[in-house]
Length: 170
Image (cartoon, rainbow, N blue to C red; front, side):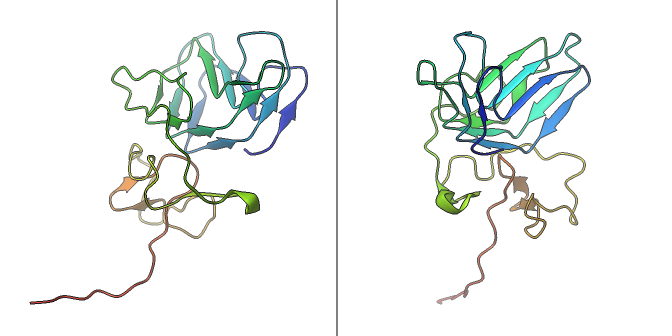
């Protein structure tokens, strides 16, 4: 979810009011909202009454409210916790949820909308391995395996294996 603008509502990339929802391995980048309401998120806004939801392996970077130019990546109430996720701000809880805050984004080529994390990105190999992540599963590109090195990356894209040469010296 990248480069969306919502001029009157709560979430520019995703705004969801539903029980029993599950969001896994999503990337929210450069989204904008324009509202004076403080309970907003330009990235991911979520409201659910039951709390029977899960939000895992989410990456949110540079999602802002245009009204006051504040970083607003996440806002969630009544939901299951957002876990194994990362953002460049400080809205995520870090209480036993394995979240990363204040990360510096290291995307492969954001100008071309390639939000694959580069080799030293904070979210690499920091996600939660989920049941559906089998050997056949791919990231959102449909090409790169979803899990490399035994642990998925946070976000929608998995850092690909780079073909190279192995040199052993004895």
